[in-house]
Length: 264
Image (cartoon, rainbow, N blue to C red):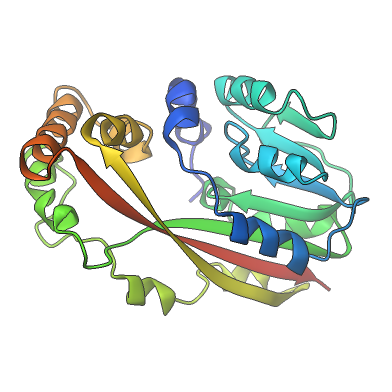
């Protein structure tokens, strides 16, 4: 079932914090995105759900003409500020699901950590419709993994079990190997009129202080959706745990997945 517009815009209330804390996409991922999509200086890119312009800015910096479409007004405002120095970048405030876009007008359509918010009944075919001949659809997934080098993911479940009613006793982050062996979960949507082009993974470790990690978590949809005082209790519990039991900081492991699908 399609996520409601209200749920899709949940990040809009934390736009500044989102911009401050969300990690940038790895440079090798962006390099592969550009090279393997066959882009040139004349290519046109549409980014769906541009957020605060993290990826938009990176693509514009490399000289490409980029249009980002963002539903949240505050996120769009922040994105416009972040790309204002680039004459080749434009941010549109709107909903991709309902926005009228010209057929065949983009050589690359990329959804970075946003595809799951789109209407599953039409998203892949709408992307195909606005792609140019032999254009590329790109989906970037951000995964949170347990590399087995840090006890914090398992240890932190004490806080979640106490404060988050949706947490189950058997919850755990997926192991790195499990994620690497997964199939592209949207493959069935890209069978008609597409062919698979590339699937590649990228890994990054980011170190966070207790304060930084608290701010990061405050931009996650499940945390935003919690009721007080549970949300504050959870964040305070995790902050105290990092300060008291982990020397004041933790290292979080990200696994980024890049999927490229060619229009045929």
